[in-house]
Structures are given as C-alpha cells and as structure tokens.
Amino acid sequence: MARIEGVCREVSDATEYVCIVTHGPQGPHLAGHWGNYMLIDEAGETVLFPIGRFQRTEQNLRADARIQLMVASRKVQGTRSPGQGCVIEGQGEVVIAGDDLERVRQKFPWARGALVVRVTATSTQL
Ligand SMILES: Cc1cc2nc3c(=O)[nH]c(=O)nc-3n(C[C@H](O)[C@H](O)[C@H](O)COP(=O)(O)O)c2cc1C
Image (tube, rainbow, N blue to C red; front, side, top):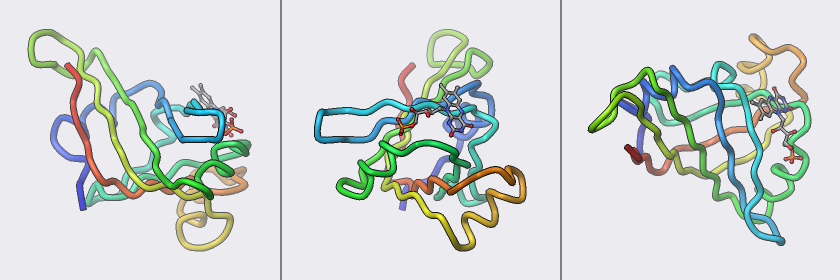
C-alpha cells in the first residue's frame, strides 16, 4: 500500500483546504474540505474526514470507489520555488458506524459519517 509521507505529508499538514474528486454518472464530481479536518493515520495509509453532507460523493463511491485528493501549500518548498502540491489517490468509502466514525467523532462530534480514503498512490505537482 502507498503512504502519505515525506513532502506529501508536509503538504497535507499545511494545506488550507482539500479538493476531493469522485466519479459520477455525469463525469467528475468535485467536493471540498478544510485541511485541518483531514485526519491521516500514523502510517500515512488512511485518511479520514468528518462529513455532514457529501451525499453525491457517497453515492458516487458506492458505484466507483476511486477517489483523488489534492492538497497544496506555499509554505512547503517545491522543486524550483516555494509551494508544493500533492495528489493523493485511493479507494474511498463513506461509513456511518464503526471505529473510523468513532475516531472522527472524537474531534468532530457533529459528523454524520466518515469519509475513509485508503491511499493507493501519491505524486507531487511542483
Ligand atoms: C473548504 C471547504 C470546506 C468544507 N467543509 C465541509 C465540512 O466540514 N462538512 C461538510 O459536510 N461539507 C463541507 N464542505 C462542503 C462540501 O464540499 C459540499 O457539501 C460538497 O458539495 C459535498 O457534498 P456532495 O458530495 O453532496 O456534493 C466544505 C467545502 C469546502 C470547499
């Protein structure tokens, strides 16, 4: 399994927001989240987000589990200049019960569910 580590971990820790892309019947679907709501496990293999709405994202993932996240920050050095971005690919699922939801609710008690992303690849953009 791939991991969020090194520069991608730094960017994930610093990003202000996260772009979340899933695949629906009409094509790509874009959602967003705050960077500091992105909970990455110690190994860097799984990401959890608290969700309130995310109805279409949940529906899309039931039919096609592929999901992509994009994070970016000017505070992390890129190859040539300040600023780095990272794409995180994975398999996603919305859960409404279980350990992952309990983990999310410790920090975000309002969450109706957790978006769970199991990381399969990471790449940098800058
Ligand atoms: C920066 C940012 C932060 C967001 N934070 C939340 C959030 O904390 N909880 C939530 O349910 N939606 C949040 N949203 C809104 C979702 O992205 C939005 O509801 C989106 O349409 C997902 O719902 P859908 O899958 O039904 O389209 C946020 C959006 C952005 C751009």
